[in-house]
Image 1 (cartoon, rainbow, N blue to C red):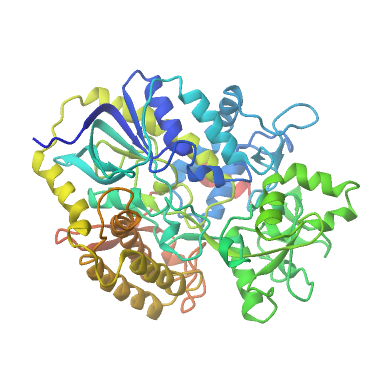
Image 2: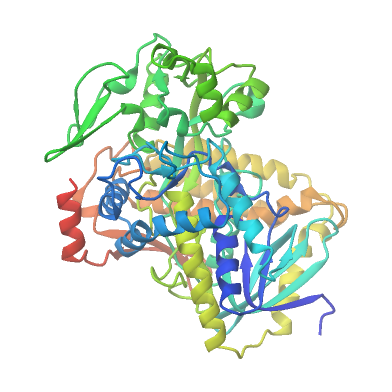
Length: 605
Protein backbone atom coordinates (compact mmCIF):
# COMPACT_ATOMS: atom_id res chain seq x y z
CA UNK A 1 0.00 0.00 0.00
CA UNK A 2 1.10 3.59 -0.66
CA UNK A 3 2.47 5.49 2.28
CA UNK A 4 0.54 8.70 1.54
CA UNK A 5 -1.28 10.16 4.55
CA UNK A 6 -4.92 9.02 4.62
CA UNK A 7 -7.85 10.92 6.07
CA UNK A 8 -11.18 9.20 6.52
CA UNK A 9 -14.54 10.94 6.90
CA UNK A 10 -18.18 10.07 6.43
CA UNK A 11 -18.70 13.16 4.25
CA UNK A 12 -15.90 14.99 2.43
CA UNK A 13 -16.70 18.54 1.27
CA UNK A 14 -14.39 19.95 -1.43
CA UNK A 15 -14.51 23.75 -1.43
CA UNK A 16 -15.01 26.12 1.50
CA UNK A 17 -17.11 28.93 0.06
CA UNK A 18 -20.71 29.56 1.04
CA UNK A 19 -22.02 26.28 -0.38
CA UNK A 20 -19.20 24.17 1.08
CA UNK A 21 -19.43 25.70 4.54
CA UNK A 22 -23.22 25.34 4.61
CA UNK A 23 -22.96 21.72 3.42
CA UNK A 24 -20.32 20.91 6.05
CA UNK A 25 -22.39 22.54 8.81
CA UNK A 26 -25.50 20.59 7.82
CA UNK A 27 -23.68 17.27 7.47
CA UNK A 28 -22.06 17.75 10.89
CA UNK A 29 -25.47 18.58 12.36
CA UNK A 30 -26.62 15.16 11.14
CA UNK A 31 -24.01 13.55 13.39
CA UNK A 32 -21.51 12.32 10.79
CA UNK A 33 -17.75 12.95 10.58
CA UNK A 34 -17.04 15.77 8.13
CA UNK A 35 -13.86 16.78 6.33
CA UNK A 36 -13.54 20.13 4.52
CA UNK A 37 -10.86 20.66 1.86
CA UNK A 38 -10.10 24.11 0.46
CA UNK A 39 -7.67 25.13 -2.28
CA UNK A 40 -6.81 28.39 -0.51
CA UNK A 41 -6.91 29.50 3.12
CA UNK A 42 -10.17 29.27 5.00
CA UNK A 43 -11.97 32.58 4.55
CA UNK A 44 -10.45 33.33 1.13
CA UNK A 45 -13.20 31.68 -0.92
CA UNK A 46 -14.53 33.58 -3.92
CA UNK A 47 -17.88 33.98 -2.15
CA UNK A 48 -16.40 37.08 -0.51
CA UNK A 49 -16.50 38.78 -3.93
CA UNK A 50 -20.30 38.47 -4.12
CA UNK A 51 -20.99 41.98 -2.95
CA UNK A 52 -24.48 43.18 -3.75
CA UNK A 53 -26.72 40.93 -1.71
CA UNK A 54 -28.63 37.70 -1.24
CA UNK A 55 -31.95 37.31 -3.07
CA UNK A 56 -34.76 36.22 -0.73
CA UNK A 57 -38.42 37.17 -1.12
CA UNK A 58 -39.05 38.33 2.44
CA UNK A 59 -41.13 41.36 1.44
CA UNK A 60 -39.45 43.64 3.97
CA UNK A 61 -39.35 46.65 1.62
CA UNK A 62 -42.25 45.81 -0.71
CA UNK A 63 -44.83 43.49 0.81
CA UNK A 64 -46.09 42.43 -2.62
CA UNK A 65 -43.00 40.25 -2.98
CA UNK A 66 -43.20 36.53 -2.28
CA UNK A 67 -41.79 33.20 -3.39
CA UNK A 68 -44.10 33.04 -6.41
CA UNK A 69 -42.75 36.29 -7.83
CA UNK A 70 -39.17 35.23 -7.09
CA UNK A 71 -39.78 31.89 -8.80
CA UNK A 72 -41.27 33.57 -11.88
CA UNK A 73 -38.41 36.10 -12.06
CA UNK A 74 -35.82 33.32 -11.85
CA UNK A 75 -37.51 31.26 -14.57
CA UNK A 76 -37.94 34.28 -16.82
CA UNK A 77 -34.32 35.34 -16.31
CA UNK A 78 -33.18 31.78 -17.12
CA UNK A 79 -35.27 31.77 -20.33
CA UNK A 80 -37.17 28.74 -18.94
CA UNK A 81 -34.21 26.38 -19.35
CA UNK A 82 -33.92 26.22 -15.55
CA UNK A 83 -34.61 23.16 -13.48
CA UNK A 84 -38.07 24.32 -12.40
CA UNK A 85 -37.89 22.20 -9.25
CA UNK A 86 -34.63 23.87 -8.18
CA UNK A 87 -36.11 27.29 -8.93
CA UNK A 88 -39.16 26.42 -6.82
CA UNK A 89 -37.10 25.16 -3.87
CA UNK A 90 -34.77 28.14 -4.08
CA UNK A 91 -37.59 30.69 -4.05
CA UNK A 92 -39.41 28.97 -1.18
CA UNK A 93 -36.38 28.33 1.06
CA UNK A 94 -34.26 31.48 0.55
CA UNK A 95 -36.09 33.57 3.19
CA UNK A 96 -35.56 30.89 5.83
CA UNK A 97 -31.86 30.64 4.95
CA UNK A 98 -31.49 34.44 5.23
CA UNK A 99 -33.15 34.49 8.63
CA UNK A 100 -30.96 31.56 9.67
CA UNK A 101 -27.84 33.57 8.80
CA UNK A 102 -29.24 36.45 10.83
CA UNK A 103 -29.77 34.13 13.81
CA UNK A 104 -26.15 32.97 13.46
CA UNK A 105 -24.89 36.54 13.68
CA UNK A 106 -24.99 38.08 10.18
CA UNK A 107 -25.26 41.85 10.49
CA UNK A 108 -27.60 42.79 7.64
CA UNK A 109 -28.45 46.40 6.88
CA UNK A 110 -31.76 47.41 8.44
CA UNK A 111 -34.99 49.19 7.55
CA UNK A 112 -36.14 52.00 9.90
CA UNK A 113 -38.41 49.39 11.52
CA UNK A 114 -35.44 47.10 12.21
CA UNK A 115 -36.11 44.43 9.59
CA UNK A 116 -33.52 43.18 7.10
CA UNK A 117 -33.16 45.83 4.40
CA UNK A 118 -33.55 44.75 0.77
CA UNK A 119 -32.39 46.52 -2.41
CA UNK A 120 -33.25 46.44 -6.11
CA UNK A 121 -31.21 44.25 -8.43
CA UNK A 122 -31.28 43.34 -12.10
CA UNK A 123 -34.18 41.15 -13.19
CA UNK A 124 -35.96 41.18 -9.82
CA UNK A 125 -39.40 42.78 -9.88
CA UNK A 126 -39.20 44.08 -6.31
CA UNK A 127 -36.42 45.06 -3.89
CA UNK A 128 -35.31 41.59 -2.82
CA UNK A 129 -31.60 41.54 -1.97
CA UNK A 130 -30.72 41.32 1.71
CA UNK A 131 -27.34 42.97 2.02
CA UNK A 132 -24.51 44.21 4.20
CA UNK A 133 -23.46 47.35 2.33
CA UNK A 134 -21.52 45.98 -0.63
CA UNK A 135 -19.77 43.27 1.41
CA UNK A 136 -22.53 40.69 1.66
CA UNK A 137 -20.49 37.67 0.57
CA UNK A 138 -17.79 38.53 3.08
CA UNK A 139 -20.37 38.68 5.86
CA UNK A 140 -21.84 35.35 4.75
CA UNK A 141 -18.43 33.65 4.92
CA UNK A 142 -17.66 35.23 8.30
CA UNK A 143 -20.99 34.08 9.70
CA UNK A 144 -20.77 30.53 8.35
CA UNK A 145 -17.17 30.13 9.54
CA UNK A 146 -17.93 31.47 13.01
CA UNK A 147 -20.82 29.03 13.26
CA UNK A 148 -19.01 26.13 11.61
CA UNK A 149 -15.90 26.11 13.81
CA UNK A 150 -18.01 24.77 16.67
CA UNK A 151 -19.27 21.76 14.68
CA UNK A 152 -16.13 19.60 14.88
CA UNK A 153 -15.32 19.82 11.17
CA UNK A 154 -11.84 18.63 10.12
CA UNK A 155 -10.40 21.37 7.86
CA UNK A 156 -7.61 20.82 5.31
CA UNK A 157 -6.40 24.19 3.97
CA UNK A 158 -4.30 24.87 0.87
CA UNK A 159 -4.94 21.44 -0.58
CA UNK A 160 -5.71 20.89 -4.26
CA UNK A 161 -7.75 17.85 -5.31
CA UNK A 162 -6.62 16.33 -8.61
CA UNK A 163 -8.91 13.29 -8.90
CA UNK A 164 -12.06 11.81 -7.40
CA UNK A 165 -11.71 8.20 -6.26
CA UNK A 166 -14.34 5.59 -7.03
CA UNK A 167 -15.53 2.15 -5.99
CA UNK A 168 -17.20 0.92 -9.17
CA UNK A 169 -19.63 3.70 -10.17
CA UNK A 170 -19.71 5.22 -6.69
CA UNK A 171 -17.57 8.19 -5.57
CA UNK A 172 -15.72 7.30 -2.36
CA UNK A 173 -13.04 9.93 -1.89
CA UNK A 174 -10.43 12.17 -3.47
CA UNK A 175 -6.71 12.37 -4.17
CA UNK A 176 -4.83 15.65 -3.73
CA UNK A 177 -1.72 17.42 -2.54
CA UNK A 178 -0.82 20.28 -0.22
CA UNK A 179 0.19 23.36 -2.19
CA UNK A 180 3.19 24.29 -0.05
CA UNK A 181 5.32 21.16 -0.27
CA UNK A 182 3.39 19.04 -2.75
CA UNK A 183 2.83 16.13 -0.39
CA UNK A 184 0.12 13.77 -1.58
CA UNK A 185 -2.98 13.06 0.50
CA UNK A 186 -5.72 10.45 0.19
CA UNK A 187 -9.20 11.35 1.41
CA UNK A 188 -11.61 8.46 1.97
CA UNK A 189 -15.33 9.16 2.36
CA UNK A 190 -18.72 7.52 2.11
CA UNK A 191 -20.03 10.61 0.28
CA UNK A 192 -18.38 13.60 -1.40
CA UNK A 193 -19.79 17.12 -1.86
CA UNK A 194 -18.33 19.32 -4.58
CA UNK A 195 -18.58 23.05 -3.85
CA UNK A 196 -15.60 24.29 -5.84
CA UNK A 197 -17.14 27.38 -7.45
CA UNK A 198 -16.60 28.57 -10.98
CA UNK A 199 -14.37 28.46 -14.03
CA UNK A 200 -13.77 32.10 -14.94
CA UNK A 201 -10.01 31.58 -15.20
CA UNK A 202 -10.63 29.86 -18.53
CA UNK A 203 -11.01 33.44 -19.83
CA UNK A 204 -8.51 36.28 -19.98
CA UNK A 205 -10.73 38.96 -18.41
CA UNK A 206 -12.58 37.68 -15.35
CA UNK A 207 -13.83 38.70 -11.94
CA UNK A 208 -12.92 35.25 -10.61
CA UNK A 209 -10.02 34.73 -8.23
CA UNK A 210 -7.09 32.43 -9.04
CA UNK A 211 -8.88 29.35 -7.68
CA UNK A 212 -11.65 29.49 -10.31
CA UNK A 213 -10.14 27.01 -12.75
CA UNK A 214 -13.17 24.75 -13.14
CA UNK A 215 -11.76 22.04 -10.85
CA UNK A 216 -15.11 20.72 -9.65
CA UNK A 217 -16.72 20.65 -13.10
CA UNK A 218 -13.73 18.75 -14.46
CA UNK A 219 -13.33 16.37 -11.50
CA UNK A 220 -16.99 15.40 -11.77
CA UNK A 221 -16.84 15.00 -15.56
CA UNK A 222 -13.80 12.71 -15.42
CA UNK A 223 -15.50 10.68 -12.68
CA UNK A 224 -18.48 10.04 -14.97
CA UNK A 225 -20.85 12.88 -14.08
CA UNK A 226 -22.88 14.73 -16.67
CA UNK A 227 -22.55 18.49 -17.14
CA UNK A 228 -25.50 20.61 -18.28
CA UNK A 229 -26.00 24.09 -19.78
CA UNK A 230 -22.26 24.72 -20.21
CA UNK A 231 -22.80 27.16 -23.10
CA UNK A 232 -24.22 29.75 -20.71
CA UNK A 233 -21.37 31.88 -19.33
CA UNK A 234 -22.38 35.12 -17.65
CA UNK A 235 -20.38 38.19 -18.54
CA UNK A 236 -21.08 40.68 -15.77
CA UNK A 237 -21.63 44.07 -17.42
CA UNK A 238 -19.57 46.02 -14.91
CA UNK A 239 -15.98 45.11 -14.19
CA UNK A 240 -13.06 47.51 -13.81
CA UNK A 241 -11.20 48.10 -17.09
CA UNK A 242 -8.54 50.62 -16.12
CA UNK A 243 -5.72 50.51 -15.17
CA UNK A 244 -4.78 47.20 -16.87
CA UNK A 245 -3.56 45.67 -13.61
CA UNK A 246 -7.11 45.63 -12.20
CA UNK A 247 -8.96 44.72 -15.39
CA UNK A 248 -11.89 42.39 -14.68
CA UNK A 249 -12.30 43.11 -10.95
CA UNK A 250 -16.01 43.17 -10.18
CA UNK A 251 -17.98 46.39 -9.80
CA UNK A 252 -21.04 45.24 -7.90
CA UNK A 253 -24.52 45.52 -9.36
CA UNK A 254 -25.29 47.20 -6.05
CA UNK A 255 -23.94 50.43 -7.59
CA UNK A 256 -26.80 50.34 -10.06
CA UNK A 257 -29.16 49.09 -7.37
CA UNK A 258 -28.38 52.25 -5.40
CA UNK A 259 -29.04 54.48 -8.41
CA UNK A 260 -25.92 54.28 -10.59
CA UNK A 261 -26.55 55.07 -14.27
CA UNK A 262 -24.64 54.09 -17.42
CA UNK A 263 -23.52 56.70 -19.94
CA UNK A 264 -21.50 56.65 -23.15
CA UNK A 265 -18.74 59.06 -24.18
CA UNK A 266 -21.34 61.56 -25.38
CA UNK A 267 -22.97 61.69 -21.96
CA UNK A 268 -26.07 59.83 -23.20
CA UNK A 269 -27.82 57.38 -20.93
CA UNK A 270 -27.86 54.70 -23.60
CA UNK A 271 -29.79 52.05 -21.64
CA UNK A 272 -33.03 53.89 -22.50
CA UNK A 273 -32.65 52.73 -26.10
CA UNK A 274 -34.26 49.45 -27.12
CA UNK A 275 -35.86 48.54 -23.79
CA UNK A 276 -37.59 45.15 -24.28
CA UNK A 277 -41.26 46.02 -24.94
CA UNK A 278 -42.62 42.79 -23.49
CA UNK A 279 -41.35 43.64 -20.02
CA UNK A 280 -41.71 47.35 -19.56
CA UNK A 281 -43.34 50.58 -20.51
CA UNK A 282 -41.09 53.62 -20.61
CA UNK A 283 -42.47 56.51 -18.59
CA UNK A 284 -39.72 59.13 -18.67
CA UNK A 285 -36.12 59.71 -19.61
CA UNK A 286 -34.96 60.61 -16.13
CA UNK A 287 -33.31 58.60 -13.36
CA UNK A 288 -36.06 59.63 -10.94
CA UNK A 289 -38.84 58.16 -13.06
CA UNK A 290 -36.96 55.32 -14.69
CA UNK A 291 -39.29 52.83 -16.29
CA UNK A 292 -42.14 50.58 -15.22
CA UNK A 293 -42.78 46.91 -15.01
CA UNK A 294 -46.48 46.53 -15.66
CA UNK A 295 -48.27 43.37 -14.53
CA UNK A 296 -52.01 43.74 -14.34
CA UNK A 297 -52.71 46.37 -11.71
CA UNK A 298 -49.18 46.13 -10.27
CA UNK A 299 -46.20 48.24 -11.20
CA UNK A 300 -42.74 48.87 -9.86
CA UNK A 301 -40.49 51.71 -11.00
CA UNK A 302 -37.03 50.47 -11.99
CA UNK A 303 -34.11 51.99 -13.90
CA UNK A 304 -33.14 50.33 -17.22
CA UNK A 305 -29.65 49.66 -15.84
CA UNK A 306 -31.30 46.86 -13.86
CA UNK A 307 -32.29 44.75 -16.81
CA UNK A 308 -30.74 41.27 -16.81
CA UNK A 309 -26.95 41.12 -16.97
CA UNK A 310 -26.74 39.63 -20.45
CA UNK A 311 -28.80 42.51 -21.87
CA UNK A 312 -26.76 45.22 -20.12
CA UNK A 313 -23.44 43.63 -21.15
CA UNK A 314 -24.49 43.48 -24.80
CA UNK A 315 -25.64 47.12 -24.72
CA UNK A 316 -22.22 48.24 -23.40
CA UNK A 317 -20.44 46.22 -26.10
CA UNK A 318 -22.70 47.79 -28.74
CA UNK A 319 -21.80 51.31 -27.59
CA UNK A 320 -18.09 50.46 -27.83
CA UNK A 321 -18.45 48.86 -31.26
CA UNK A 322 -20.30 51.91 -32.59
CA UNK A 323 -17.66 54.35 -31.34
CA UNK A 324 -19.43 55.65 -28.25
CA UNK A 325 -17.39 53.79 -25.64
CA UNK A 326 -15.22 55.15 -22.87
CA UNK A 327 -11.50 55.80 -23.51
CA UNK A 328 -10.47 52.28 -22.53
CA UNK A 329 -13.26 50.34 -24.25
CA UNK A 330 -16.20 50.36 -21.85
CA UNK A 331 -18.82 52.74 -20.49
CA UNK A 332 -19.16 55.22 -17.66
CA UNK A 333 -21.02 54.17 -14.50
CA UNK A 334 -22.10 57.23 -12.54
CA UNK A 335 -23.33 57.10 -8.94
CA UNK A 336 -22.14 60.65 -8.17
CA UNK A 337 -25.20 62.13 -9.93
CA UNK A 338 -27.37 61.29 -6.88
CA UNK A 339 -26.13 64.52 -5.29
CA UNK A 340 -29.07 66.03 -7.20
CA UNK A 341 -31.45 64.00 -5.03
CA UNK A 342 -29.65 63.28 -1.76
CA UNK A 343 -28.40 66.07 0.49
CA UNK A 344 -25.26 64.38 1.83
CA UNK A 345 -24.62 62.10 -1.15
CA UNK A 346 -20.95 61.57 -0.34
CA UNK A 347 -21.67 60.07 3.07
CA UNK A 348 -24.56 58.05 1.60
CA UNK A 349 -22.36 56.48 -1.09
CA UNK A 350 -19.60 55.68 1.39
CA UNK A 351 -22.13 54.02 3.68
CA UNK A 352 -23.92 52.00 1.01
CA UNK A 353 -20.89 51.16 -1.16
CA UNK A 354 -17.82 51.24 1.10
CA UNK A 355 -15.88 48.57 -0.80
CA UNK A 356 -16.51 50.22 -4.17
CA UNK A 357 -15.41 53.60 -2.80
CA UNK A 358 -12.11 52.21 -1.52
CA UNK A 359 -11.61 49.93 -4.53
CA UNK A 360 -11.71 52.80 -7.03
CA UNK A 361 -9.90 55.25 -4.76
CA UNK A 362 -6.97 52.88 -4.15
CA UNK A 363 -6.76 51.01 -7.46
CA UNK A 364 -7.80 53.64 -10.03
CA UNK A 365 -7.45 56.99 -8.28
CA UNK A 366 -11.17 57.69 -8.78
CA UNK A 367 -13.47 59.22 -6.17
CA UNK A 368 -16.84 57.67 -7.05
CA UNK A 369 -18.67 60.26 -4.95
CA UNK A 370 -17.48 62.94 -7.41
CA UNK A 371 -16.76 61.28 -10.78
CA UNK A 372 -17.95 58.31 -12.84
CA UNK A 373 -16.29 54.90 -12.95
CA UNK A 374 -15.11 53.31 -16.17
CA UNK A 375 -16.50 49.78 -16.53
CA UNK A 376 -16.89 46.98 -19.04
CA UNK A 377 -18.02 43.33 -19.20
CA UNK A 378 -16.02 40.69 -17.32
CA UNK A 379 -16.38 36.89 -17.25
CA UNK A 380 -18.23 36.31 -14.04
CA UNK A 381 -20.29 33.15 -13.59
CA UNK A 382 -21.05 29.74 -15.09
CA UNK A 383 -24.74 28.89 -15.18
CA UNK A 384 -23.84 25.36 -16.25
CA UNK A 385 -22.45 22.65 -14.04
CA UNK A 386 -22.87 19.14 -12.70
CA UNK A 387 -26.30 17.69 -13.48
CA UNK A 388 -27.86 16.90 -10.10
CA UNK A 389 -31.10 15.67 -8.63
CA UNK A 390 -32.96 18.88 -7.68
CA UNK A 391 -34.01 17.73 -4.21
CA UNK A 392 -30.88 15.92 -3.01
CA UNK A 393 -28.13 17.57 -5.13
CA UNK A 394 -26.63 14.15 -5.91
CA UNK A 395 -25.13 13.66 -9.37
CA UNK A 396 -27.59 12.01 -11.73
CA UNK A 397 -24.95 9.47 -12.84
CA UNK A 398 -22.41 9.09 -9.99
CA UNK A 399 -23.82 7.76 -6.69
CA UNK A 400 -22.25 9.33 -3.63
CA UNK A 401 -21.21 12.50 -5.46
CA UNK A 402 -23.11 15.68 -4.57
CA UNK A 403 -22.67 19.23 -5.86
CA UNK A 404 -23.86 22.63 -4.67
CA UNK A 405 -23.29 26.26 -5.62
CA UNK A 406 -21.78 27.41 -8.90
CA UNK A 407 -20.35 23.97 -9.70
CA UNK A 408 -23.91 22.57 -9.86
CA UNK A 409 -26.09 23.26 -12.89
CA UNK A 410 -29.84 23.72 -13.15
CA UNK A 411 -31.09 26.60 -11.04
CA UNK A 412 -30.16 29.50 -13.27
CA UNK A 413 -30.93 28.21 -16.76
CA UNK A 414 -29.68 30.50 -19.51
CA UNK A 415 -28.90 33.47 -17.26
CA UNK A 416 -28.53 34.04 -13.52
CA UNK A 417 -30.24 36.94 -11.80
CA UNK A 418 -27.99 39.00 -9.54
CA UNK A 419 -28.24 37.95 -5.91
CA UNK A 420 -29.53 34.47 -6.69
CA UNK A 421 -26.00 33.12 -6.32
CA UNK A 422 -25.68 33.76 -2.58
CA UNK A 423 -29.08 32.30 -1.75
CA UNK A 424 -28.28 29.37 -4.08
CA UNK A 425 -25.21 28.61 -1.93
CA UNK A 426 -27.05 28.27 1.35
CA UNK A 427 -30.28 26.72 0.04
CA UNK A 428 -28.57 23.93 -1.89
CA UNK A 429 -25.49 23.75 0.31
CA UNK A 430 -27.82 22.76 3.15
CA UNK A 431 -29.60 20.21 0.98
CA UNK A 432 -26.34 18.71 -0.29
CA UNK A 433 -24.95 18.35 3.23
CA UNK A 434 -28.17 16.83 4.55
CA UNK A 435 -28.50 14.22 1.80
CA UNK A 436 -24.77 13.43 1.67
CA UNK A 437 -24.95 12.60 5.39
CA UNK A 438 -27.98 10.39 4.78
CA UNK A 439 -26.23 8.63 1.88
CA UNK A 440 -23.16 8.04 4.08
CA UNK A 441 -25.28 6.47 6.83
CA UNK A 442 -27.17 4.28 4.37
CA UNK A 443 -24.04 3.15 2.49
CA UNK A 444 -21.27 2.53 5.02
CA UNK A 445 -19.24 -0.06 3.05
CA UNK A 446 -16.76 0.93 0.33
CA UNK A 447 -13.22 0.29 -0.89
CA UNK A 448 -10.51 2.24 -2.73
CA UNK A 449 -8.07 0.39 -4.94
CA UNK A 450 -4.33 0.91 -4.66
CA UNK A 451 -3.84 1.07 -8.48
CA UNK A 452 -6.24 4.00 -8.69
CA UNK A 453 -4.26 5.91 -6.05
CA UNK A 454 -0.97 5.18 -7.82
CA UNK A 455 -2.46 6.27 -11.15
CA UNK A 456 -3.52 9.58 -9.59
CA UNK A 457 -0.02 10.09 -8.16
CA UNK A 458 1.60 9.30 -11.51
CA UNK A 459 -0.62 11.76 -13.33
CA UNK A 460 0.21 14.51 -10.83
CA UNK A 461 3.97 13.89 -11.00
CA UNK A 462 4.19 13.74 -14.81
CA UNK A 463 4.89 17.49 -15.41
CA UNK A 464 7.77 17.37 -12.91
CA UNK A 465 9.28 14.26 -14.42
CA UNK A 466 9.41 15.88 -17.86
CA UNK A 467 11.68 18.65 -16.60
CA UNK A 468 11.65 22.08 -18.24
CA UNK A 469 9.90 22.21 -21.63
CA UNK A 470 10.36 24.74 -24.39
CA UNK A 471 6.76 25.93 -23.98
CA UNK A 472 5.79 26.28 -20.34
CA UNK A 473 2.45 25.92 -18.56
CA UNK A 474 1.94 29.68 -18.08
CA UNK A 475 2.31 30.28 -21.82
CA UNK A 476 -0.24 27.58 -22.61
CA UNK A 477 -2.65 28.93 -20.01
CA UNK A 478 -2.41 32.44 -21.48
CA UNK A 479 -2.93 31.06 -24.99
CA UNK A 480 -6.07 29.21 -23.88
CA UNK A 481 -7.47 32.22 -21.99
CA UNK A 482 -6.90 34.55 -24.94
CA UNK A 483 -8.53 32.12 -27.34
CA UNK A 484 -11.57 31.66 -25.10
CA UNK A 485 -11.91 35.42 -24.67
CA UNK A 486 -11.76 36.09 -28.42
CA UNK A 487 -13.62 33.08 -29.81
CA UNK A 488 -16.01 31.87 -27.07
CA UNK A 489 -16.87 35.22 -25.49
CA UNK A 490 -19.92 37.49 -25.50
CA UNK A 491 -20.52 37.17 -29.27
CA UNK A 492 -20.02 33.77 -30.93
CA UNK A 493 -20.45 32.14 -34.32
CA UNK A 494 -19.95 28.72 -35.90
CA UNK A 495 -16.57 29.49 -37.39
CA UNK A 496 -15.10 30.96 -34.19
CA UNK A 497 -16.39 28.09 -32.07
CA UNK A 498 -15.02 25.44 -34.43
CA UNK A 499 -11.68 27.25 -34.46
CA UNK A 500 -11.71 27.32 -30.65
CA UNK A 501 -12.38 23.58 -30.42
CA UNK A 502 -9.46 22.90 -32.76
CA UNK A 503 -7.28 25.17 -30.63
CA UNK A 504 -8.34 23.44 -27.41
CA UNK A 505 -7.33 20.05 -28.82
CA UNK A 506 -4.00 21.46 -30.01
CA UNK A 507 -3.27 22.96 -26.57
CA UNK A 508 -4.26 19.67 -24.91
CA UNK A 509 -1.64 17.89 -26.99
CA UNK A 510 0.93 20.47 -25.90
CA UNK A 511 -0.06 20.11 -22.24
CA UNK A 512 0.52 16.37 -22.43
CA UNK A 513 4.19 17.17 -23.12
CA UNK A 514 4.64 20.23 -20.90
CA UNK A 515 7.20 20.17 -18.11
CA UNK A 516 7.07 22.25 -14.96
CA UNK A 517 10.70 22.01 -13.86
CA UNK A 518 11.88 22.16 -10.26
CA UNK A 519 10.41 20.04 -7.50
CA UNK A 520 7.13 19.87 -5.59
CA UNK A 521 7.99 22.60 -3.06
CA UNK A 522 6.37 25.99 -3.72
CA UNK A 523 6.13 25.37 -7.45
CA UNK A 524 3.46 27.52 -9.18
CA UNK A 525 4.43 26.14 -12.60
CA UNK A 526 3.50 22.65 -11.43
CA UNK A 527 0.20 23.90 -10.02
CA UNK A 528 -0.62 25.57 -13.35
CA UNK A 529 0.30 22.47 -15.34
CA UNK A 530 -2.18 20.46 -13.26
CA UNK A 531 -4.86 23.18 -13.50
CA UNK A 532 -4.64 23.01 -17.30
CA UNK A 533 -6.43 19.65 -17.37
CA UNK A 534 -9.45 21.27 -15.72
CA UNK A 535 -9.30 24.46 -17.79
CA UNK A 536 -9.18 22.46 -21.03
CA UNK A 537 -12.08 20.24 -19.96
CA UNK A 538 -14.43 23.12 -19.13
CA UNK A 539 -13.32 25.11 -22.18
CA UNK A 540 -14.19 22.23 -24.48
CA UNK A 541 -17.55 21.73 -22.76
CA UNK A 542 -18.39 25.43 -23.17
CA UNK A 543 -17.34 25.66 -26.81
CA UNK A 544 -18.96 22.36 -27.82
CA UNK A 545 -22.27 23.26 -26.16
CA UNK A 546 -22.17 26.79 -27.62
CA UNK A 547 -21.64 25.43 -31.13
CA UNK A 548 -24.49 22.99 -30.74
CA UNK A 549 -27.05 25.62 -29.59
CA UNK A 550 -27.84 27.47 -32.81
CA UNK A 551 -29.79 30.40 -31.38
CA UNK A 552 -29.25 33.35 -29.04
CA UNK A 553 -30.75 32.91 -25.60
CA UNK A 554 -29.84 34.46 -22.25
CA UNK A 555 -26.07 34.65 -21.81
CA UNK A 556 -25.46 32.73 -25.05
CA UNK A 557 -25.28 35.06 -28.06
CA UNK A 558 -24.70 33.79 -31.62
CA UNK A 559 -23.92 36.36 -34.34
CA UNK A 560 -24.97 33.82 -36.99
CA UNK A 561 -28.21 32.97 -35.13
CA UNK A 562 -29.16 36.29 -33.46
CA UNK A 563 -32.73 35.38 -32.48
CA UNK A 564 -34.31 33.04 -29.99
CA UNK A 565 -35.79 29.96 -31.58
CA UNK A 566 -38.69 28.18 -29.87
CA UNK A 567 -37.47 24.75 -30.98
CA UNK A 568 -34.36 25.18 -28.79
CA UNK A 569 -36.39 26.06 -25.66
CA UNK A 570 -37.46 22.54 -24.71
CA UNK A 571 -34.14 20.86 -23.93
CA UNK A 572 -30.82 21.29 -22.13
CA UNK A 573 -27.38 20.54 -23.54
CA UNK A 574 -25.69 17.64 -21.74
CA UNK A 575 -21.98 16.77 -22.09
CA UNK A 576 -20.40 13.62 -20.74
CA UNK A 577 -17.31 11.52 -21.22
CA UNK A 578 -17.79 9.01 -24.04
CA UNK A 579 -16.79 5.33 -23.95
CA UNK A 580 -13.67 6.13 -26.01
CA UNK A 581 -12.69 8.97 -23.69
CA UNK A 582 -13.80 11.87 -25.88
CA UNK A 583 -16.46 14.43 -24.98
CA UNK A 584 -19.94 13.75 -26.35
CA UNK A 585 -22.96 16.03 -26.37
CA UNK A 586 -26.69 15.37 -26.44
CA UNK A 587 -29.94 17.31 -26.14
CA UNK A 588 -32.12 16.31 -23.22
CA UNK A 589 -35.79 17.23 -22.96
CA UNK A 590 -36.77 19.44 -20.04
CA UNK A 591 -39.35 17.73 -17.77
CA UNK A 592 -42.84 19.24 -18.19
CA UNK A 593 -43.61 22.18 -15.91
CA UNK A 594 -46.38 21.32 -13.42
CA UNK A 595 -49.56 23.24 -14.10
CA UNK A 596 -49.52 25.03 -10.75
CA UNK A 597 -46.07 26.44 -11.49
CA UNK A 598 -47.04 27.34 -15.06
CA UNK A 599 -49.99 29.25 -13.60
CA UNK A 600 -47.66 31.17 -11.29
CA UNK A 601 -45.48 32.27 -14.21
CA UNK A 602 -48.59 33.36 -16.11
CA UNK A 603 -50.00 35.25 -13.13
CA UNK A 604 -46.71 37.02 -12.39
CA UNK A 605 -46.27 38.15 -15.97
